[in-house]
Image 1: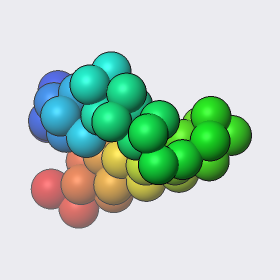
Image 2: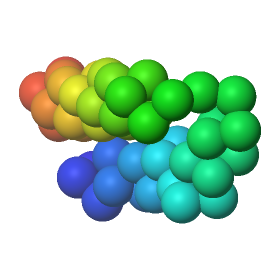
Image 3: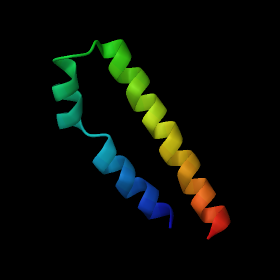
Image 4: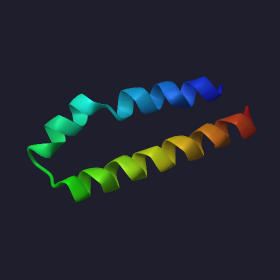
Length: 52
């Protein structure tokens, strides 16, 4: 199940997404966004492993 969280992270956090976001956001906001999404993906991965 751990690979499932990795696959979500790859789809949710990608370089093309960052380049598109750069047109409307600053690098600081993009870093905050990527950090928040990464944290929640890791937390949800651990929760799914505990529950399932």
